[in-house]
Length: 410
Image (cartoon, rainbow, N blue to C red; front, side):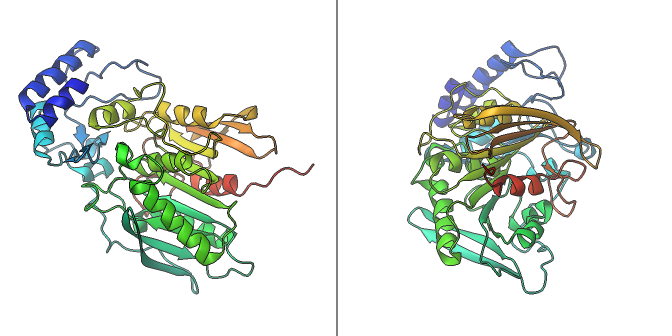
């Protein structure tokens, strides 16, 4: 696959096509158009592997820039939107890669939902609360963002959560789907929703797989960190209560921020995301999303100590393989002890398993929620937003509870 990408960059799409087809043929299990690609893990129970050649596979985008591609996302198209779509051959995909043009229809990943834009309907805001558009600019670039300030902060802001949306989403869509503004009212939290637009990525994805957006002091991590520091100063927020969370590509970027800025973010929430440094281009991004990332992802900077980490992942996620959640937790467990496991069922009927490790102070250091039957969607989210699973346990409430946990009394 690495040789194929080199051929793409050298404007030799036919040779790249040949190399990829040969690699796929060598690893193909079974027969027929929808046979899954073999992986190093083989087929795990409750999961679906991804075949880039299958009729219902979509490559959301692959656009060449200075150091490679700006986005890679693969997912199954819901059955209800398959009819009437012409199949895109692997050669077409490679030709598109070489031309730097996006491939596939991103809206099909969300059942035909159009790409949300800045004019999308905003969530309802209680009287006295602030929910406004702002812009942050720094040495590494700028981003607009939505800022939510609760109606009442009698004791000042009790913390900051930076929320990073997934591909094809925007801040309003993400705020509606996660219902995080309501939790901000309950707990006195400031919430920031940075926006990734088509100007920065053709499908609005955070560029988690680009080397230039994976390290401290550069690219998107530096922009988001700068935005957080600005809000910490403006609202006089306790430095021990600064967190970042995200979904899918946003979750992958949250994982990067946790490793690149452990001195800034004391806790991260990753929903349906990937570990930091697990990909460096489109080919490795596809592999990582299938659960085939290299065992040792590249370090992205920061201190040796891990930040507190909570991970949610659907066991039936066919877009980002659940093994990625395991990898994030494994990297975050350094120094943790007292592992506890439990099972439960959400009010909506979804069964789930949790694995919790505690640090020396008794505060949960990591939590891993694996949700049976859930796909690529925010668990417990509202149907008012995209990529949500209302039947699952409430990921938003559990993340806030995890973030604000206090040390046990001694």
